[in-house]
Amino acid sequence: MPEMDGISLTQKLSHQFPNLFIMVMTGYFDENAMESAIASGAHEFIKKPFSLAEFDMRFQRMMREIKA
Image 1 (cartoon, rainbow, N blue to C red):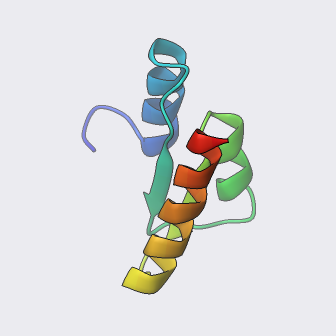
Image 2: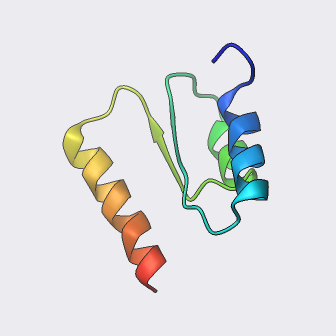
Image 3: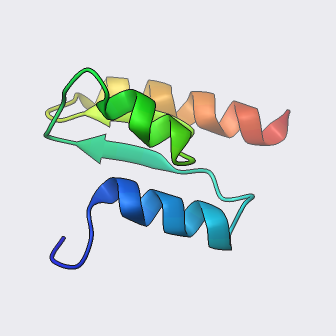
């Protein structure tokens, strides 16, 4: 994204919409990437490339959290 990275976007969205469930998808991964995403407000984190099955599993888990 030209204006900000995904972590910054996650922080901004989480602040403006605290009840929004966010899944961060990234092609860049280091040891702190997932921790940073979750600390910024993401509920799920998935690394590219990912399978449709993995995406579905994480999405369904996030949807169960909404219903709980």
